[in-house]
Image 1 (cartoon, rainbow, N blue to C red):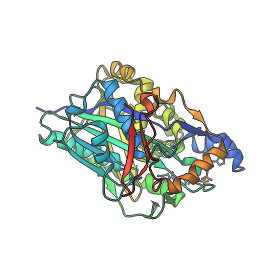
Image 2 (cartoon, rainbow, N blue to C red; image 1 turned 90 degrees about the horizontal axis):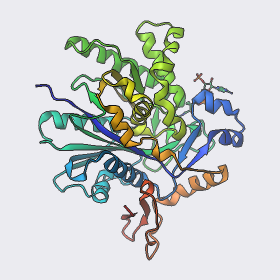
Image 3 (tube, helix red, strand yellow; image 1 turned 60 degrees about the vertical axis):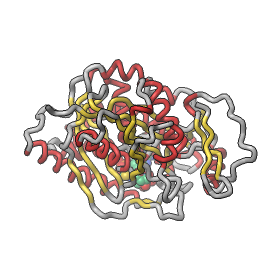
Image 4 (cartoon, protein in one colour; image 1 turned 90 degrees about the vertical axis):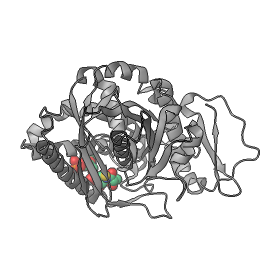
Length: 408
Ligand code: COA
């Protein structure tokens, strides 16, 4: 009998603070509509020094467990996708294993391929379950990143930070994915890179847009071929979630895919509001979260309209610079709306602090030394914090080991 495998539950965490892009535009002497309409982003999340990718992922996972009713002892595989790792050797997943109290009988590792890293984790988790290795257990996949470009650069308004956590299991409650039917595309390109000595990414921005669109065309063609070859479902994809470095990119992607399907530009654009727009609400308030961006789009879509999508087929497109991409599809589960209500997906956006541009620039400068910040002695006593920000990075000890406090 065919197994039903997919995403059972999802949650995300964002830093406490954000920058309003109209204020950034004023500071950079750019018309605000370039950021809000031209790029399609309104706010970008900014991480403070204690909100590193480990802390963000821990907070997302913790929210996931509490809201979904799933438990750490059900997890047999923990994969952290990231392109802003905190160590060249020790994976973020190992820190999470400790902070979340996962079982010792657990496969734990990190995946990297720019923004594709989380999807690499999802695909590995699906295969792990389908192969029988899971033996009834579930996988925890984390996508966690801090997107940084140089102050004043063209990439600056496309920053962001956050982590998305999801559980991959048999008989999922949110979305069943079409197993073994994924269209892949890869090509060695230099559209975006981050040398080992840099915290800010380097990017050939306009080239990266073209690489994204080429990868979409390649992955989509492969997905269509595979679906035809093995007689997959013929029903249309009623919604599609794309990788969202900024909202306008998803608009360009959707137009491109619809034109491949034979629509004119005007016809393609006419489908955007129905098929894509609701998936962009969260990213417009958070910015680019790199590996988590596709899954933030999925969370946004489900938050907006899970009920009316139950039983229907949706598409997903993941892109990672460098480059690797995958197009795949799934079906929103019956009862997904109940699960979405339980998850309170938008909760982390409720109480955030707006940063002045001066304070944002101070935080960005402090980034340069954050990885060498000594642990204060003695460590600060746990303060009363909400579950949203329970885990925090406090610095490195005398042997350069990273230290976290955790009030959960
Ligand atoms: N009002 C409304 N729209 C405006 C505008 C204004 N005053 N001024 C410019 N725009 C529009 C432009 O027409 C353009 O739209 P289009 O893409 O539909 O043509 C958009 O805003 C961006 O303007 P552009 O001049 O192309 O921006 P840029 O050269 O400063 O940089 C990126 C844009 C995306 C290349 C840059 O932000 C970047 O490098 N980001 C990081 C890399 C990235 O995210 N890549 C995506 C693929 S992974």
